[in-house]
Length: 271
Image 1 (cartoon, one colour):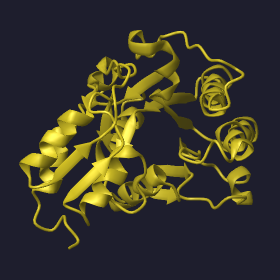
Image 2 (cartoon, helix red, strand yellow):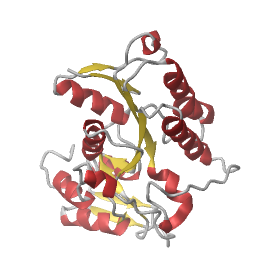
Image 3 (cartoon, one colour):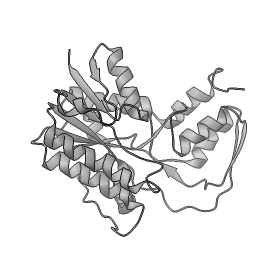
Image 4 (cartoon, one colour):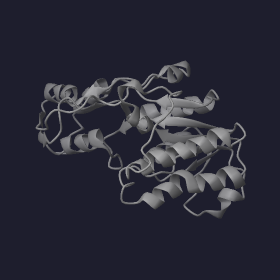
């Protein structure tokens, strides 16, 4: 039996990893924040899931602490076999449509307040890849969604509204789109990275941008009305290359198929 440690086990992805690993009989340590055992015990194989997403703009210092500060202590002081550090495909955004490959040279405006997220994740990646003695790799997660209470982001929030409302109006552009991936497919990608000893950086994504207009079509086919009242939008951000993920035997499902399955389930609406 392997020994796993999930740092950030109370978060959206961390909690799912803990549940899945324990469900297959693994020994999983899920330390609370400040747990001294983090530096006293052998952590085994680590999933580093600690981080901030939606509130990073109002909590910039906590963001850096989570993405870099704690990570520094773990890399320097903890005993572990291997680590997978969860980062984000948001790091490609500044490259526009030409970005999306793990080997891209990233670019950031250091004066932009929103880049505290990108810069701190990038520094975390650098520490893992350059200062771990080859024991740490990076998973860049795309736009993860689900319809559970702990899920966040545009599509997750839309799905949670859809459980209560049949007609929804959004101040969003029909042309705007993202590379979405369901949380279950993220877990599959992370576990494949662990099982097959992935190296370097791996995009955990679908590899296809889906527009709001395409999402609205799926909703309409299942009895919802989705009114997109926003104006024109710039082209979507980078579409991720997923060849490394495919080489691990994982292909994320088409978001439209996942949405159709959820919206077509009689148990989906709460009312």
